[in-house]
Image (cartoon, rainbow, N blue to C red; front, side, top):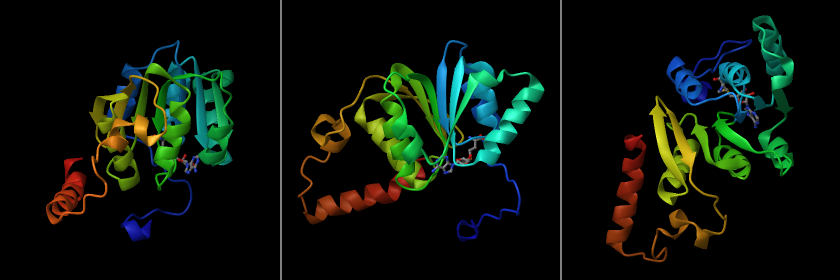
Length: 211
Ligand SMILES: C[S@@+](CC[C@H](N)C(=O)[O-])C[C@H]1O[C@@H](n2cnc3c(N)ncnc32)[C@H](O)[C@@H]1O
């Protein structure tokens, strides 16, 4: 944390999303929805309270226990929430093929390749027409995945709140590059002319400022 200029005090710390993001999610949730998120916190309470059933992925049993205790205090039934405790590269990969989601929020591990990896597993279970939110698009591993979602054409940008970007799923997507508009976009990856290289460098430099 210190390396990124962030001070975290010892003990429990909240990295919760802001009220604007909570409101956007609440406005797009309904009682028939099955929902999933990576990461736990205020968002978990919101999803568990408003959705039909919520799956929350966290590495921390302590977070799960504290959230359950809080939900009991405010009268949200225990059986509306399933915690998948462990790292998402293991827990999400074990989801049964008949588990389908209507709304997902990705705010777990933010290091490469986790935002894309969380999307990869969740996307396979997300209904067409479902919504997915990517938190912290100011961070490179998230931002670059958002670029994929926005350029590829299988998701449509549905909302931006602070550093969160929400998308509606338009269709299922094969993972092979030839099937992806995003991966085909560079017409000739072997084009090594000076002008092409300058254009690519300039695009790379500019992109972080566009978010
Ligand atoms: C930024 S917080 C989530 C905040 C939450 N969305 C909220 O609004 O309160 C990040 C969360 O990701 C979880 N996490 C970190 N690495 C993870 C991983 N590899 N797999 C699953 N969860 C992870 C942490 O335990 C923590 O709950």
